[in-house]
Image (cartoon, rainbow, N blue to C red; front, side):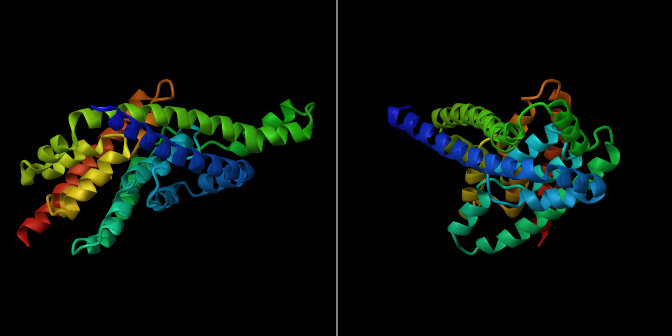
Length: 290
């Protein structure tokens, strides 16, 4: 691998991480003003929260899964809502598909609809069968913090809540995402994109399984590769769907930042993987028999 390749990886990682930072920072600043209302809304609409999670995941931005994982660790959203976001998000895929128009681009609409519905329904099932984690009332927490800091200057408290806390938290996420992006970028460059292409296209009937494996890569490179293979007619729609259902960007890795989160992360990972394989092959069977 040349110095130019390493420089390209660093610049791409910096760009992607900066976008995540901006997305997360702006959201957390907004959240600092509406957290009590948001918490009450999610608490009162827990059964419908996966619907909003699946809808949120459709935003074609690599920060959506990161932000959802962040909110889950802070107990703003349930496991079902997080799963809905992970299944519905597509990282950079939608941008790639829409900016390379051909006869297959029209399948973007069925792709979006499928990912939204699958995310919503699976999220509902997860919340139905996994009720150990509930959304906590952050309004009560806020009152406790306010009472314990009543002797501090009000302006100082507001500065920390609305600016400093979102900034420091977003910088922490930025550093984590940057390290992961650089590491994975260097590995992908060293292995070569041709390896992944050959791996996926070597057996068309196993392509939904292969793209699901590639979708595990916590980096936008996975979604871009899967989308480009679909555009080139190298994989069927079922493989595209499977890979993008599994592709939750770096959100999965963010979950592991929390101590003791390995068990829950493994459960979410397993649910997403099984869902991806199932619906990928179901869609492929429809294609093969039509």
